[in-house]
Amino acid sequence: MNTKIDTTPTPKVKSSLTTNIAVSVGAIIAVLLVLELGLHLVIKPDTTRFSATTGWRGRANEFKLLDTDGYDHPFQLNSLGMHDTEHPFAKPANTYRILMLGDSFTEARQVTEPQTAHQILEDQLNTSGQGKQYSVISAGVPAWGTGQQLLYYRSEGRLFQPDLVLLMFYIGNDLNDNIPIHSVTFDDVAYYSPYFPLCKGRLDPQPWVYAPGLKPTVGTCSPFQKVLAENLHRLYLNSRIYMLLGPLFNRWQGNYFNKNLPNIHMYVPLDNETFRQQFPRENETIAYAWQVTFETIKLLQQEVEADGAELAVVLIDSADVIDLLALPPAEQEARAQEMPYLSMTQPDYPEMQFRRALAGHHIDLLNLQSELIRYTNENQQSLYFPHDKHWTVLGNQVVAGILHDWLQEKLEVKSGS
Image (cartoon, rainbow, N blue to C red):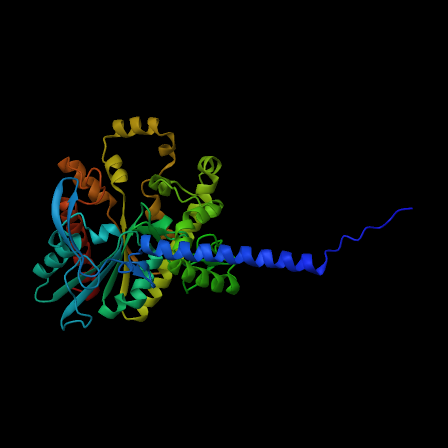
C-alpha cells in the first residue's frame, strides 16, 4: 500500500524562508545604495553642458586654448554657450538677422571666432549692405542633429527674431544623428539627445527621450512607452549605477539601427539593389533616417514661418567626399577599384533627395559641393584640416564667400532690386 508523504512546509519553515528572502533583498538594496553613493563621488556628470531641451549644448563662457592639427588658437564661447559674440534677443532697428543652426561645422572651434564662416559672412554682408545692418547668429553645437536644432529653435533661437534661418546640414552624420540612441560623452557619462519618431509613418511633433535598455520608438508610438522612457531617463540622469551600465544596456538595442554608417553610404541611392543586398540593415537605417530628417525639416519650416521668418538649407559634404571628388578622374578610378562600393555612389544624390522630398515647400537649397571642389581644384589646396576634418581658416573664408554671394542674390531677388 502506497503511503502519501506530506511535503507541505511547516509554518516555521515558511517563516524562515520568507525571512531569508527579506534579508537577502535588504542586503542587495544596502549594497546597491552603498555602491550608488560611492559612484556619486567618482562619477560627476558635467551638468553645465547638459540640456534638458537638446541633450547637451556648449558651456556658457567656456574658454580654452586649442590645438587643431598644429594650429594653436583661443576658443571662447559666449554667455549662451555658442562660439559667437554676444547678441541681444531684441533685434536692433534696420537689422536683417540670420540664425545659423548646425553642428560642429557651424560652431567651428577649429578657428578663432573672427575666423569663423558665420562671422566673416556677417562682416561681408555689412560691407556690401549699403546702409542696412546684418547680424549673423551662430547656433552651432557639436553633434547636434536636425531634431535638436528644431528644439533649440523652439526654446531659444526664435527669441532672436531672425528674418532667415539657415539650416546647415552636414551630410556626413546628420542623418545618423536624427535616429534614436544618439549621444555624446562628457567625463565618461553619455548624454542622449531627444528624438522625433515616426508614428505609423507620421512624425510626432513632440520629442521623445531615450533610456538605455528600453527599446526606442520607431514605428508604433505607445503613450505608456513614452511615460516609461521619460521616467527611466530621469532615473538615468540621477543614478550613477544606471549610467555605468548604460553601454551594456545599449548592446540590446543593436538590432534596431546600424549606427556605424560610413558617410559615403549616404551617397548611394536607396533603390540600388546591390547595396540593398550587401548592406540590408544599413539600407533600412538610412531610409528611415532620410524620412525622419525631411519630416523634421518640414516641421521646422512650419514653426519658422509661423514666426514670420524664412527657412533655407545649406548642404555640407565631408572632407573625404570633397577631397575625393577633387581628384583627377584617373585617381578617382583607382580609388574606386580599391573600394568597389564607390561605384554605387552618386555625388549629387543627397541634393536630389532634398529637392525631391522638399519640392513644393519653397525652401531654398544651397549645395556647397561644386564650389568647394572648384576652389580645391583651381588652388590645389584642401579646405579641411587633414586629421580634424573640419574647415581650415581658409575653408571658413571660402564658405563665407559662397554664402555671401548666394545670399546677396537671394536678398536682391526678394527685394525686387
